[in-house]
Image (cartoon, rainbow, N blue to C red; front, side):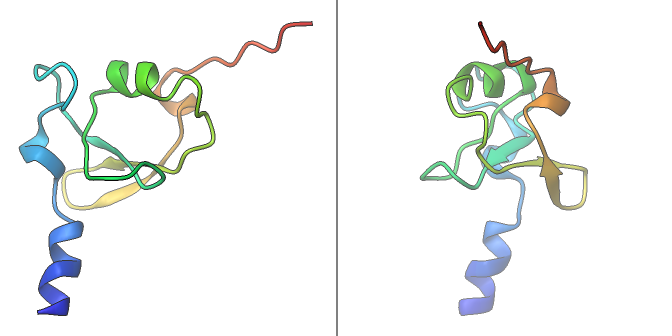
Length: 80
């Protein structure tokens, strides 16, 4: 049963639909956030604009691999 739970955690979250907009492909998950949510690239940027160091993963069609907000188009402005 333990193995079954571990394998369930490695499946595509929310059938590939974005939890926020419901329209985009929810291929990104965050291991730092609580719960199991999926975001499309634009929604993950909005949801994590104040948490740029969260641990994100992108579904590549077979498994989740590490990604960053920068790879999704995030630009951090360091005002002076």
